[in-house]
Amino acid sequence: MKDIYIFGIESSCDETSCSIVKNGKEEISTVVSSQISIHKHYGGVVPEIASREHVKNITLVIEECLEKAKMKLEDMDAIAITYGPGLIGSLLVGVEAAKTLSYLFQKPLIPVHHISGHIYANNLVEEMKFPLLALVISGGHTELIYMKDHYSFEKIGATLDDAVGECYDKVARIIDVPYPGGPTIDRWAHEGSPSYKLPIPLNDESFNFSFSGLKSAVINLVHNEKQRNQEIRKKDLAASFQNVVIEIITKKTMKALQERKVSNLIVAGGVAANKGIREKLTELCQQENIHCVFPPLNYCTDNAAMIAASGYFAYKKNRIANLELNSKSSDVLN
Ligand code: KG4
Ligand code: ZN
Image (cartoon, rainbow, N blue to C red; front, side, top):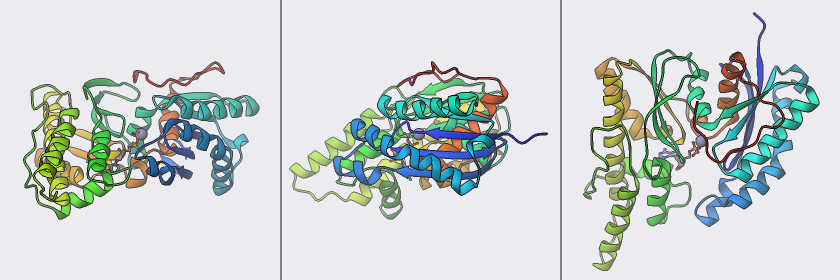
């Protein structure tokens, strides 16, 4: 069978990235240009700055990716692009670049949903086995998705308010940890003890999540301690917060696996890098005989390899867009 090379582009938030992936599973080259050091000064991503940085970086990233692979755009079978969801200005830069390349080199244009990209990052680790449950935990999403086959997405639960990564970043900010705070909170959680009491949010029978109440509980706790002139034990607070997150996420994930009678779990998104969540899910899945896959850390946060991997399966299904493709800040995964 002929090898299929997909050129992927991702620019939905604060990473400009390009990647070449062979047959949906073999990464040939990936370049990620992160803007974290710029947005850090503002405590979060500033959309206008993000778009401008993508404009500055996109051509360089495309060229570097091709150089690294010693390949040309002529060698590609298709161009896969994150069309949404994300920051509209940021998405637009990638979509316009992809459309230009598609037109110039006469290559099919494959629109990829950002979350589908996060899910398919796992196919770069090992071939996905169906049916599976995908736990998507990132800065913008917290979802449980059932897949009976490739490109069949059934959302069975989602956050009703903040995403879990967003909650990590906001809690981090309250205790003066720079953006993105998730990795630091994760590290501190392993050094502190969970001695603060925090509520377990939306601890019900549904597969939905809620994190804004937990964030408010942390804000109130910090204010109360300050008013009483008490020093905040930041590492203990990180441990207490992370314990609650792990508790609710693992509880609902394990219940969904059981109810749907699924024995394959994949974890996706930036928060899939979380050591505490990895440890607990690995332990529970071992107990229940569930095959659990986590992407390596470089495939957890935004990158174009995951977009190219997902793009391969979309290409196989003939999901091709024309040059009228537009970016969408929000869109249903289907
Ligand atoms: O998937 P991603 O790169 O962007 C979105 O699509 O949203 O995820 C970024 C999010 C940030 O909120 C960041 O704080 C969080 O992932 N994150 C973590 C960890 N590493 C990254 N959260 C908790 N623990 C981590 N180790
Ligand atoms: Zn993402």
